Image (tube, rainbow, N blue to C red; front, side, top):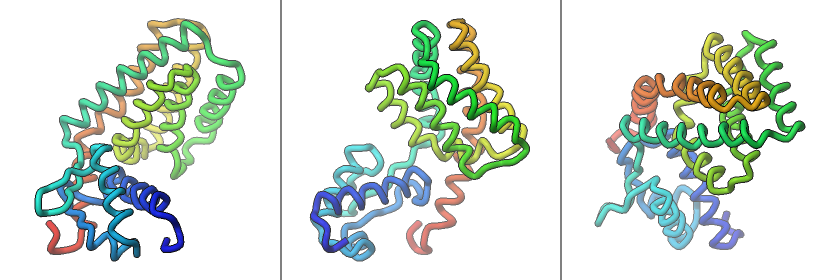
Length: 230
């Protein structure tokens, strides 16, 4: 890292800390100090301060007077609020696609992907949660609405740990595949209301895991935290 310029260093530190936070490697209110981060990343205070400032602007940490910075993890209510936002965005997306249509190539690619996953069950792949996230973001990208794309991506980052906990059984894998294919079918046929219903069912399936995923993430974050930092 020492040969890199400050902006590149700041971005790298920011990306690493952001990844840890959204994966709940840090517990709520975990303290981040400039001194410790300088030692860990082997850089000066300048890129560390800039990275922390970026995290504050992203809502991932809060600055605490005379105590450095504290990790800000969402509580159960905030997670449900994020699901409300996600549902509003994705209902708009699927409605837009049902009305305006999807390019043939993108529609065929998504259909082949999820049909193949369904046909190869009960194999459970480690990247299934990422595949699920990519499916929803691909639909957003197809609308061409950059604001919707960015907002959905931001929400998905904060809900990623739910997907990791949720889509782990063969039954859940199967239902997710079937729901995705149903969404694509309704988009192709231009059935707006049924497309919305299919999307809502898919999203609500994940919402049901909020409390369980939140408890697991919280327990894991405290378990991984060094003793003396609670």
